[in-house]
Amino acid sequence: MQGAVLLLPILRLRDLLRQTVEAVRLCHRCGHEQEIDGAELMGRLGPNTFLKHAVSEMRCGRCAHAGDASWKTSVTLVRYSARVGDLMAVRSQLAATCGACRRRWEVDVIDAMQRLGPDVRLAELRDVLPCPFCRRCGWVVTKPAGRVDAAHPDDHPGRMCGRFAIHSPTDQIATRFGVVGQLPEFGPRYNAAPLQMLPVIRTHPEMKERTLALLRWGLVPVWSKDSTGAARMINARAESVPDKPSFRSAFKKRRCLIPFDNFYEWQVEGKAKQPYAIGTTSNEKPDAFAGLWEGWRDPATAEWMHTFTIITTTANDATSKVHDRMPVILPPAAWAAWLGEEEASPDELVALMRPYRGHYTKVIRLSGM
Image (cartoon, rainbow, N blue to C red; front, side):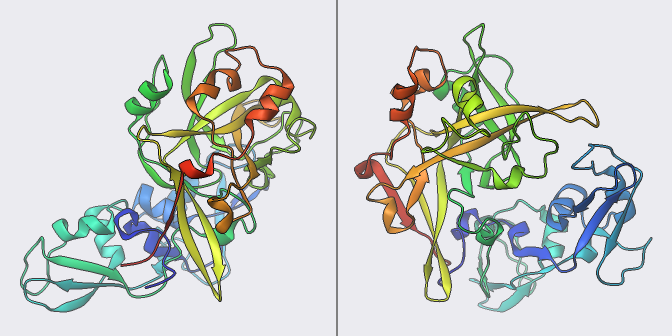
């Protein structure tokens, strides 16, 4: 199945779902309209939660207020009886074959999510999904019956590093980067996306200790009037970081490291987009992107939001076969200087934002099973 995004072992049940209606949440406090992510709601609340209850628990993306909100769609749904599951449909049928009795059937993805949870990987279905005919477990082989665009590369067309994976355990991240203090609760992300809360490593300016915290991906400059432009600032070009108003202050004072295991890129091949997983050949994981972070205070609520962006540079010889740019990957020897723990001039910092050594880069073509 050429063109399926992500390897089957890391594809999850929820990746087979998508919105089938355009639904938005209307905040009655500030009037902000916010798109409803049906997959996120289903994973968090389940498909049978009434939409009016689910929407009331959501926080407004502008004023962060919960409650005093309603929802609306472009199709007719019964207002008070509609459930989260009504926003969802199977994007790609999931076909299964029993290795014991050799019978085939189509898996009801929503039913499987209700019984097994949204984050069960397709590779794990062999052990937990019973055959409906012979009832045996451990024999099932699953295969998407159509194209599965699980990573949604079109969400940020033309952007570099719009998706990456960080699945190393939190304690491993802490050991690898020498982090001290309390660690945030964080599960593996095989498809980390913009506007999500993701782990970021910073150095305390006074104590000079490295800390690990969850920041939102998509930088909001301190002078910004609102946070609506965050999705457009998931990346910062190394060539303009020192001078661009959105990044120059953070480049001087608020540099950070973003741990990752690999990142994804897509290459147009005819009418399809072929996904690739790109990483380093290092035996020690995770590696680190060079990033910038910023604090922004919401004028409506006076609450602080902490966000980050990933710096990109020209691609090395290995990555250039897929894309003309790549994230700045910093080797361990550069971490202290980038975090401000060691003295480094602006020119020395600029010199760190170079393409990663090509012969230490691995590029893997992804395909379906």
